[in-house]
Figure 1: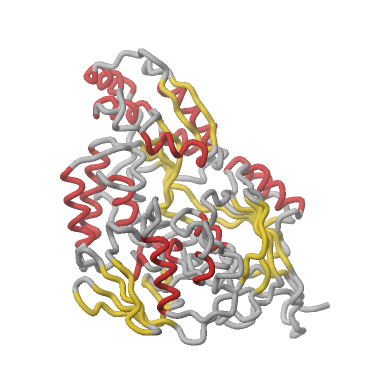
Figure 2 (figure 1 turned 180 degrees about the vertical axis):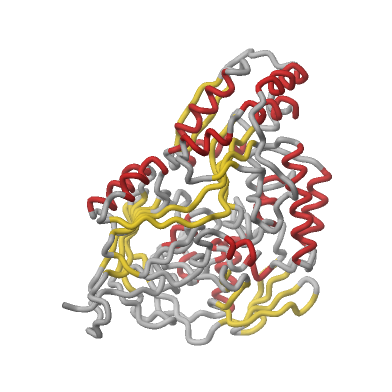
Length: 513
């Protein structure tokens, strides 16, 4: 993996770096820092599950500098490094022991102990909807060996347990966070920032953790705002209402790059915009029909128009530079005659318009849907478009009550290895299998990869699994995207994380005037 990360134009070197979100002072000054500074961060999603760690709420708590995990993935080194745990070892084929860092306190003043970690991790393990990286299918039990040792037991041998413990869903909260009917992170994290209040679905306010184990935190606090509209996030960083705006839409790039008050940060990311197709529902349950949809689309034109050249047309479920990419894979080319032939082979007749759902959090998807609608019209497939927020449509997606969906998945967001993405999204029992795809051959390959200790052999198996997905035209992978954030020109030392897991960590502030 390391070779791919370092070959990126800007790379993922900020993936887990301590992010500085301070304010410029004169260069070279040795004045004391102004510790009263606060900043505003615009994020594109809001927590929807009462802060449950097994949900995407853990991402919010992580990027806010509140939630920390036992291990951390260091993209520059290409390896797992210590965080709340200082060391770990596999003590038997099914057991891993993690040794906790000494002297760490939760923000409520209670100590970090093995029992506290067990309580937190068990809340994830027992969640009604398990976390994709850490659930009963991959973890059998969590137990305290002694005051500073946590044992993770797996149902089968797994070389990737330390990777799973770096997932934000395995972030650790104090036992008091779990005494009520729902998870309460307020004052119960270990990170440099303490969540103190929220306006539900609007914002989260954080103060400095005065007793942070990692040293003095040099910002007084922050406000993280949940703004799903990308144009609004872009505007607010221009007006100064926000200091940092994450996930900027392509349509706003030109204006931001021309504004001297703003810096635009871009980095390659393992994120692909995807046209999901419901393989469990007619007419998408026919592989020839799915291939016809793929043949009808002009991915080169899509990348050049809607994405204005800031994204590359996809070659499949992986980017070509990834070590598990399908060898020799090429971008599918538009071929309308072939698409019509495949439609005829599938026996398709347009009995009803098919619907594309475009998630509202990604502003460009409305335009992408329009382009796809026009492409499919050329082969006689009528399409309607609906734009809606992800949280509102997810129940229908999981239930299979949809035709097509425009969304995106970061292949390394669940766990910093493709096994998480390939398992959750495409195995028969995958917990994020929106495509409703299921074949025994694919599942066998993924099961084998999950127990393979040799990384190169594991990558070969990932490539083999990806080829099945491509050959079956499970989805249409459209473009490989960049992560794009915008910051006010006064912000210094902000380290961009293409996985959107970290925005506030140990930070710096401007010199006192």
